[in-house]
Length: 285
Image (cartoon, rainbow, N blue to C red; front, top):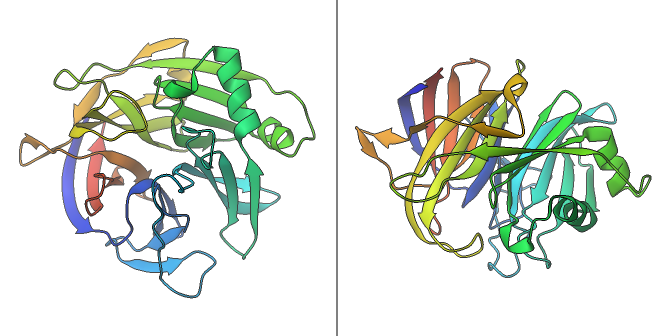
């Protein structure tokens, strides 16, 4: 995989943690705010979804919903943005929200029973639980847990039936992603995009921290990809370090999305208190 940096833009949106491409614009979520931000392709904030102003309210770490994962999907014949809290703590971070992109409709669910069922089935402790990315391909949802670099696949209808308590069960599959270290530090999946062919494009980052709650020194980020047909119980991934002017950039790339041009992407950084940045890149495999 190779990429070419085309443009760099500063962002007003803080702590960007997920990004989707819709109607020619970039729909962004933040892990320190609950608003859904819509930016143009130069990173300029043009709308806060379901709001009349452009105000973003950042929240203290202990109070935030920690929205880390998002994806576009069809639900009840409309296009919705599904946003998930990371679930990294029992309090506050277990909220799912569906935002109708064509109306003011919003639906929310409690994610804790779903997350708890997945953790119980695959014997994952909450200390190793941090859902950082989400992707929807056809009728299949893929949840990426940074804490273990696991991917959980669940049928979309089963997922919503369980959340709406119309069903007490759902089936799931578990895949283990294997990434090498970056300069001696573990890489964790942080952002995902899937295209119409079933190819997943992922960002992963490394930082000097002992857990998934506390931040640490940022080492850098990489980009990797795989096709849905390659998914298996354990799969090794190759990656390309994200370098600027030939040097590894010390940043966490937490979001990636593909434009209508299949080789043109945007990635966004969340550098723990510093201004988020938007990068336009050309990506080829």
